[in-house]
Image (cartoon, rainbow, N blue to C red; front, side):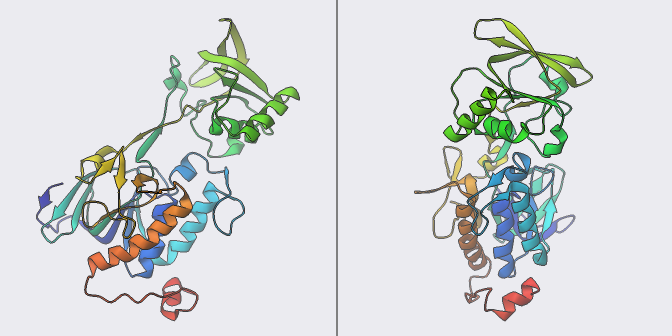
Length: 348
């Protein structure tokens, strides 16, 4: 990371740049807002929520405090409502391409759309970094992507009354098999072997649906796709014996995992540990003063990759960021339940 001279033309100013607008990045806005720090969030996706809304917006989450069950989209909506009083600025469909430290110790953040932002602190809350689904090795699949081949389910209703084929053997494949079976015209699960990596309870429920004749299970691999103008009408599956089996298909969901990349973050000069950012557990600061990392992107002894843990990290990071920005300012710890000044900020 180089050093640049501060400029004023066409540069947006803010207190904090948060790279990533997933649940942890969103909650960081709340904690920083209580300390009168303004945030700008930059995300490569087209909306807030990160993996929660990109990969499983309707999938239930069970380990968020006070919410026995909440969907990924529901959690994102609640967080957006919670941070609304602090008026955060969002920049979507954008990737941070460069980070420079200015002469005064602040940062100049550049993005791939030409935007430049100056900030006193940078917080990396990018989950696993830039992520994209792994494309299965099926000839011609690109022509169907986004029309009848999808790598995530944003709205279950978009799959109602379709002939659905789900490919994979992990939790995502099993979860969506169970969730979409009631709305599908037909549903087939395809896996290369009759053993699954997903939760045993999900495997048992899937097999019960197969035994009841409600879904089909094919052991083999997708060999060929058939359709026109991006719309599938059937697929061919090569079974264990090498024979081809044709299956009706108007929607295919391959779940082969994700490819995670740090991208330009890896070039910022911060210490990395197996493609994760090493931080301390007092401030959640990286090896570069003023750059913090929270959520799944960071690593430290005892790290748990839970949204809950990321919320905790965001709270400690916020206080450390405030001290970094205003080292001589006394920070009075307050509770939102009893502090009238904090309640005024929240508009309650």
